[in-house]
Length: 100
Image (cartoon, rainbow, N blue to C red; front, side):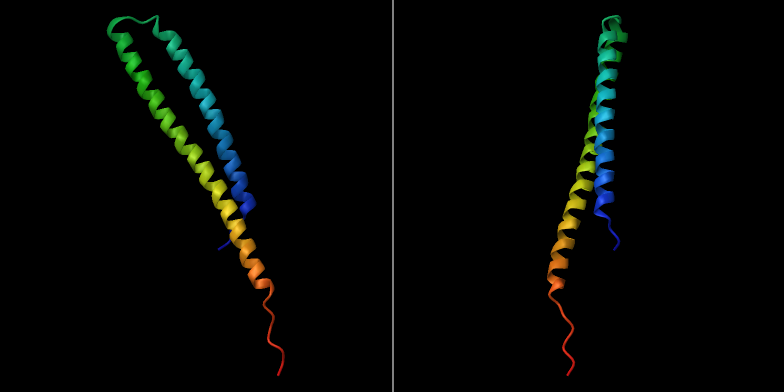
């Protein structure tokens, strides 16, 4: 197995940053839609409100998945680094047998 904890950490940071960017864009879009709702009336307003609500719920779920993925990458990197350090400490005391 070839694992690079620093690459996992970098990928986790990138995914977390993307999650924050997506969240900010989603919030801006949701605010724009909310502001536009007052200009709609009747069935159109009802349909747009329903669609906007579904979109917001879906966006929130997808963004949560992205955030959880970034956390899983971060934790995997930390866990592997700790396991690798522990294994290295255990192997550091092993010496070849003395010649007979």
